[in-house]
Image 1 (cartoon, rainbow, N blue to C red):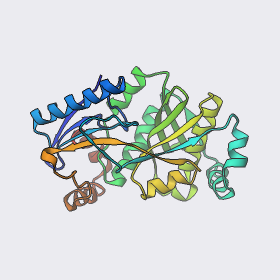
Image 2 (cartoon, helix red, strand yellow):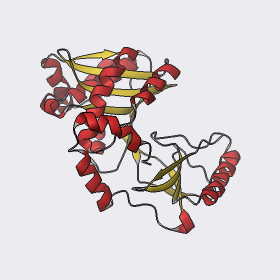
Image 3 (spheres, helix red, strand yellow):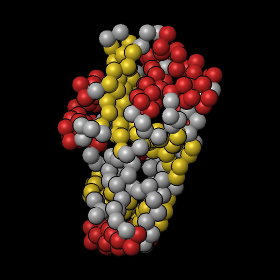
Image 4 (cartoon, rainbow, N blue to C red):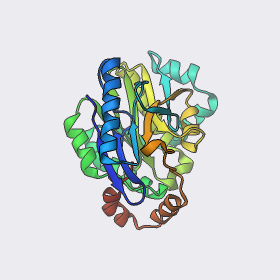
Length: 282
């Protein structure tokens, strides 16, 4: 099986993806079946005349597509108990960063009822980053369809949500897929408490690996994830540009300008129209 989604945008181009919004979703099957699926995807890309076919996988599939290294993830192996992680794996600097929001009285809440608070923080964080937010209906569907594996967490300063995340537990691994925090609380580091609380919870649930989600090598997000002591892990995504050309430039001046303008939108407007544009981004 290989899920594919066609994405069209005048701003970014015409894509065939497996899968948009997520970090993984490539072919499922034996090595021989995966290679055949990749070939079929290439044929479909030719039929649709897309600018780029991209399969977002965690393993090398083979077949006619090229492997690109534009994204990586960071994986942290979790010990059997929280004390080992805190005392033996974390540096004193990292522990002090986690204590800062704790000393400020911030608390973390978990559960499906945190969806509204999560989205309130996430939508504002995405606006501040200059990126259209995904629709709230997507997260509502995730909560309904995957009640056992989807995790919502929110950090509160008194009664105000100031950092939040949503991720998935799959077998022995947890991935935090979406997260954000309010910039005016940055000095109190609520995002540090968010990640620590999720690690505590996953150790309690006997997970053995914490996946920080995809990032661009060398970016600020990458540095944030590396400070927790995890290992860089390549994401061998597969691509085939149209007619053997080059991969799209994701840092074009037009996209940078659009991102800068998006940051200036009123939050209500960005949240309302963001999903319309988000579904058109690869």
